[in-house]
Image (cartoon, rainbow, N blue to C red; front, top):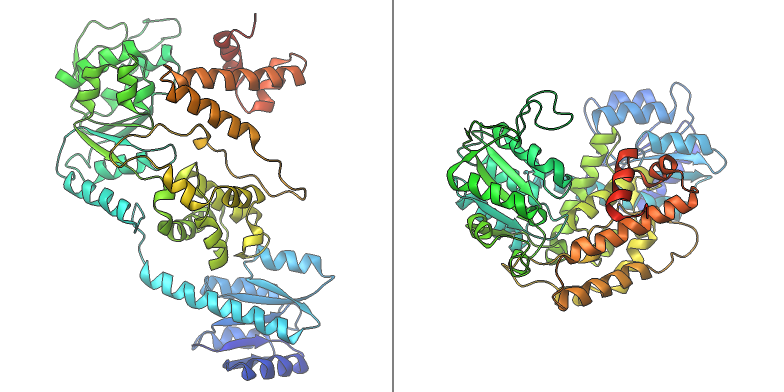
Amino acid sequence: MKPIWIVDDDQSIRFVLEKALVREQFAVRSFATAREVLAALDDDEPQVLVSDIRMPGGSGIDLLGKVKERLPGLPVIIMTAYSDLDSAVSAFQGGAFEHLPTPVDQPKAVELIRRAVEESLREEVRETASAALPEMLGQAPAMQDVFRAIGRLSQSNVTVMITGESGSGKELVARALHKHSPRASGPFVAINTAAIPKDLLESELFGHERGAFTGAQTMRRGRFEQADGGTLFLDEIGDMPFDLQTRLLRVLSDGQFYRVGGHQPLKSNVRVIAATHQNLEDRVKQGVFREDLYHRLNVIRLRLPALRERREDIPMLTRFFLGKSARELGVEAKRITDAALQRLQSFDFPGNVRQLENLCHWLTVMAPAQVVEPKDLPAELLSGAEARPAAAAASADPAPGVAPAVPMNGAVAPVTPPVAEPPLPATWLADLEREARRRLEAGEPAVWEALTKQFEGQLIHTALEITRGRRIEAAHKLGIGRNTITRKIQELGLDD
C-alpha cells in the first residue's frame, strides 16, 4: 500500500499525525508546503493526502485542485477549523473526500484516514475490473440470460417484443439489439405510443401530406420513413389506440402504408421492436388489443427482470450512475459505503433502474460529503426499505416469461430530499395499490386508463382550486404546458 501524505506548515501537527498513523502501521510521508507535494507527485503518489487549509506558498484548496487534475480518484482530506464554513464548503466543491476539524482529535483523524484508505483501495480494484463499462450492466443470472438472448438475436431481423416493468430498461435493450444487428449502420428511431395524443399519433407514425389537416402546412415524414433501413422501437405498444393497431398490422404484414391525407402507397424497410409493461394477453381478452397484431409482434419475447429480482447488480449500477451523474454535472463522482449499498439492496425500487438512476443523480447533488453513508440516503427510501422487506417483494414477482402488469406505484417520481420531520406514510400509494389490485383481479377493462383519468383529474382539480381557477398558474405549478392543461380539462370533463 502507498503511504499517507501529510502537508502542513506546522511541524507539531505533522509530528502528532505521523506518530498516530505509524502506531496504526501506516506508512507516512510529510511535507511543509504545497510546492513540495506537487514536486513529489512527479515520482510518487499517495494512498491518501491530508492537507492543511492555510499554508504559506499555496492554500490547501489550490493544492486540492492541482492534485485532482493529476489524480482525480485520490481521497484528499482538508484540515479546517470548525468555524471556517467557507473553507469547508470550498473543500467539498473542489472534490475533497472529507474535512478534518482542527484542533485535530487523534482517534477521529486516524479513523477518518482509515476510511479514506479503504475507499481508495476499493476504488483501485473497481477501476481495474471495469476499465471500459459496457452499454448495459448486470451480473445477475436473469440479466445474463438477457445478454445471451441479445447475442443470439444479433444477426437476425426478427420482430422482438420486450416486456418488463416501467423503468427496467426496455429501450436500452432495444438499442443493444439494433447496435449488434445487420442494421446497425441504419437509424434507430424510438417513439412512446402512450406519450402522444391519439389524434397526433397517426401522423407521428406515418407522416402527413401538406394540407391533410389544420396546421399541416408542409409535408412531414413519419417515424416509419425516418427509420427506413434501420430499427423502429415502439414503446408502450399496449396503449396504442385500437384503430391505429389495424394500420400498424398492415405495415408489419407488407411494409406498405400511406401518409395521412396521402394517396400514394409508400414502403419502408424497417425492423420493429416493441415494448410494453402491460400483460398483452389480458389486453387481447379485454378486446382492447388486436389478437392478430399481438401474434405478429410476439415472434420473440424478451422479458426484462425487475431490479428487485437482480439485487446483486445494485452496487455496480449505483457506482455507474454516480459516475454518470458526476460527468453530466461536471463534478467529482461521489463514493458510497458498503453499509449504504446494503440499505439500497434491501429496498424494492418499484421504479426499477430508472428510480435508482434518479436517486444517484439526487445524491450527486445533495449528499453533504464526498462519501455517501446510510444517513445520507433519503428518509422515504429508508422507510420504504424497512416497510417492505426483500422476501415479501420476491413473493410478488411475476412468473418468468410473462409480461407482468406493472404495479400502480411503479411510476415513482425521482426521490425527494430528506426533511427534518419524520416522513408521512405514503397511504395514498397503498390505497392506490389496493384499488388497482381490486380492479385487476376483478378483470375490469382499461384499468390503466380509468385510474390515470382519476389521478390526472384530481391533480388538475386541486391545482385549479389552489390557483382559484387560473389555468396558466395551475399548469405552472403542475409542471405542464398551458395547452396540455386545457386539453386535459376538456378530455376529463372538468369544464362541466
